[in-house]
Length: 110
Length: 113
Image (tube, rainbow over all chains, first blue to last red; front, side, top):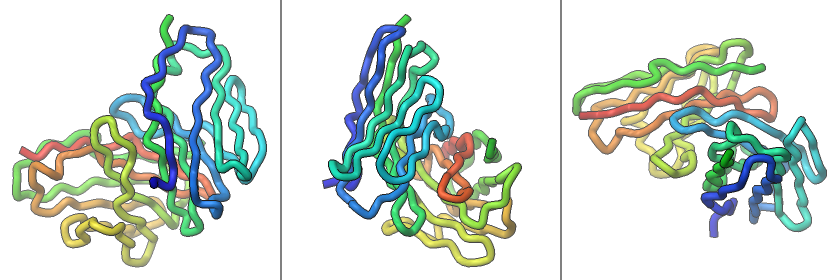
């Protein structure tokens, strides 16, 4: 079993839809949770960063962490074609290393 | 925001030669940088952790003599792929740590012919 599980998709939605992306993990020691967006042939871009359980909102993006269920989510409201990318969840272990999910490919159709 | 650059962005080299990739944190100092490798349609695979002023820590299965890492200053880490072979062709990405956050460079595409 991988430490971090993420459905690779692809996920296709119409423009304006609410997108829900999720990851589960097995290591209860994870404290920091990140979401990265990666466009093709580019480096990942940090979108959201959350410490421990709770919600965090930034514009159209909301990150949720439920440590009791070992489940994290990223919601994108009013999705745009420019949101089409691969979304990677990542968790930091106690050595400072990031453990990534497989990434979910999202396509937002105009 | 925190910016990380990589150079070159794309390199083609012949089998048997060595290639050096630079990773720089432009507007912050990073005592720790990371090097990743990414194959098409796959997630990032951590190769090594680079600490300023000390030896890099390599992940299991990564050949330290083949992938030489030098973190000579708080803003620069280099990855040298020695005696490159076609199977080393990949997308190499570095990141720099700022607090609990990691910021990634744009990546370097290496093609070994």
